[in-house]
Length: 260
Image (cartoon, rainbow, N blue to C red; front, side, top):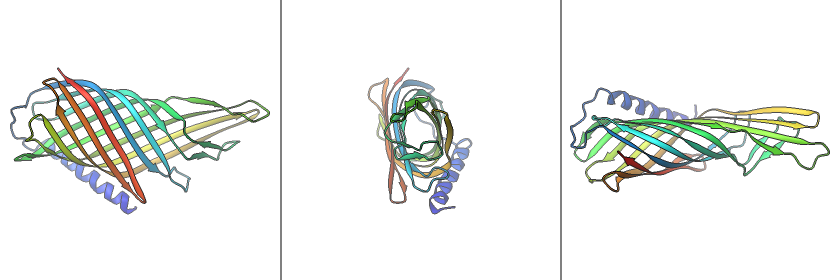
């Protein structure tokens, strides 16, 4: 196991322990403790550098998504979210060598159906600081896209479909003394799994290749804030990085939610 994976595993373990503790730890009473329901639109982005199984060189997975999100808050400070939307993923510098004619996947963007679920919970509070835990899982089910192969004496086409899933879990520290604005700092272990299936037909030649990331671990560090702009409208925003050998990957999110 690499140092990066060992670090991610430790953060994942701490986050899971914090989440378990949240179920039994006492939560200080707050004036805002009440059941709530919010819904709105959220934009998200992430970039991950991975090595696909069987490859030697690293390449990127980049995704933007827009989703409708519903958030249910409980009287004890727990929050549960569900998201449904569309993802738009790209895979620059990815090569398929196991087909009759090798393909270099460059700048095309592939759409997909995005499903997400998350939970956050307070663990302890000391003065203006609240320590909690958060976890979220996101699944992008790609839509098949076709390309015409040009420059050959016979007709040809290629079809590709990517799927990916990311699980993020870890501790969160929130400042709760600023009224309508609640800034936070979080550290997450982020586990990514991805598949990309490419098929090719060129005259009498047919082939299929499946590229896979069996499970890539990364550590993410992010700052964010939840801000009530009015009594009913909230702005949510987050930006962060995922350190890796030789550089940084990134993540970001922003959205507006209406509290009913």
